[in-house]
Image (tube, rainbow, N blue to C red; front, side):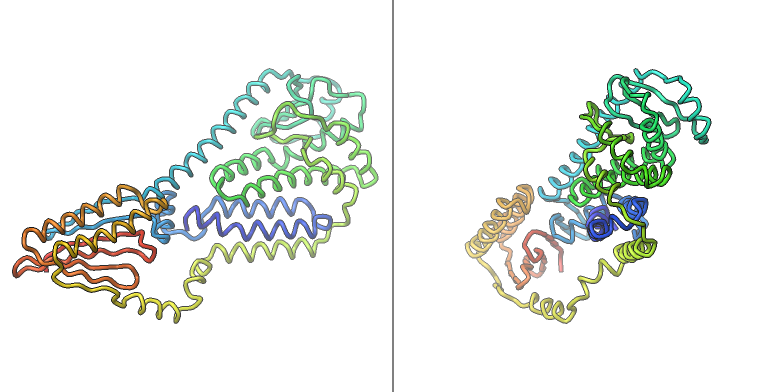
Amino acid sequence: MNLLEISLSSILLIIIVIVIRSLAIYRISKKVFVFLWSLILLRLLTPFVVPEDWNLLQGAKETMNTKAIPHVVNIIRDGGQEVIDKTSLSMQTIMTAYFIGVALISIYYLIMYYRSYRMFAKSLPVHNDYVSEWKDMHKLRRNIDVRTSEWISSPLTYGIVHPVILLPKDFNWDNIDQVDYVFEHEFNHIKSLDVLRKGILLITLALHWFNPFVWILYILANRDIELACDEQVIFTYGKSKKSEYATTLLDIEEERSLKTLFYSSFSRNSIEERITLIMKAKKNSIFVAAFATIILFGALVYVSSPMASKVSANVAPKQEEKEEQKSTEEVFKKENMTYEEFEEWSNKKLEESQKLVDGGEISQETYNLEKQDYADVLEEIKNGARVDVRETADGQFNIVIKHGNDDYDMDVNYSDDGTEVTVTEKAK
């Protein structure tokens, strides 16, 4: 299964989580939503059903072949085979646009990361009694540093192996309750490896930038990461502290001078949603959470199975058989065409191809090669060859070139929409 198929099949999963989120956000732990988003990320980044020789370019080309975008001409002469790859302008444009999109997004976030790293490098360590006592009470295998910077306006966390809690230079240490909430929130980000999770989200976004539903996933998943930390703070300090914690969010929330990319920030653009969920949150329902997980897992198994990609092909097999029989019916047949007759017929075909070029469905190169093929046949007629043409309803036609007692077949096959060309010339 190639990248495009994975991205499209994941749309169903994203929609399911969006619906569950809108209906049960007050009844399900936000950690469940983070878990559900993680399952979709796993799907977007891992080809569950895939041939052994899968790779991005091959997968994309195979997908495009089903839409008859590439053009390949196979010419067989004297027992040998010459293959001319005439990849259409559309295919080249699509692949070029995709990689340009991946490159632009990657470069943008790498630049932002580099700028952030340089600013963070200018931060200063914090040494006071509160930090020392807090570190003693919050032991992890990874050593946590606390630093301060004049370049930020709200607390944030960055770093995976060596996590750092970064505080604004004017951070208010006098309000002990507020300080407790901030440190607890950031500590939950560190324990949950949310910085790593955000990095994976960025990688997914870069690879699937063409899918608008992945952008929605990116936004909502980042929100739920913050909401999960808010939920854990309330759990730690008790529901009676909900109002105080909500007030802390309002006090700390300011216009940030630095975007949060590869680190987790205490503040969010959706501060209203966070406060609303804090104040209106109900008792979490294990049943609803389990039901939501089962639904998504079932959908995940379905979209990852070969059956999903074959359903559309088996919906109406009888109708397809009828269409296949109909497609082989002859709509044009002419034997021993004269130079003028073949020239008139080929000009009509070139007019049809020119329309495809104008519509961006095939490349100018493809048109030129097709024109040259017809010119070669006309030259054969000039040299005394006899030419027969047979065209079927599906747009395929055969050109038979006869030299004396020898017959040469030139099979020119077009796809249903007239964009895929296969020319075969061989002695009978």
